[in-house]
Length: 111
Image 1: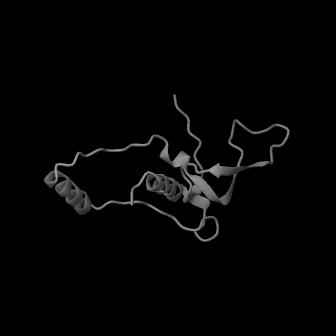
Image 2: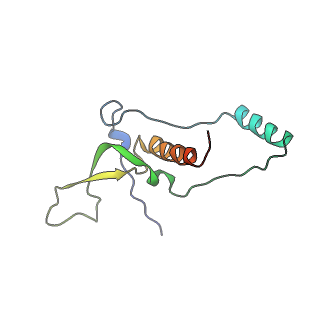
Image 3: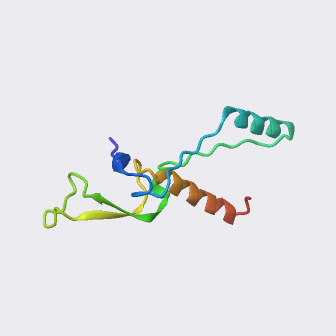
């Protein structure tokens, strides 16, 4: 059995709780174009899948969440958690992951 802590981003308001939302989408025509160019130049094609990708993004906004059920501190049940890394469910999680990935690939020479 697997368990994952997921933030409740439904209550987040753009401009108040997060600066912007982000959803990377690739059009099928773009994929066909890239594959056509790669085939015509005999380039190899690789696919990348990062497990738990959204958990690797750094948050630049201040985000708090209630203590998860089952993990409440019995001495301080009203305390909240400050998040430093993104969680699934947060509106800024896709942007945080993409920014971290883009920063890394630029350091290894991609433009």
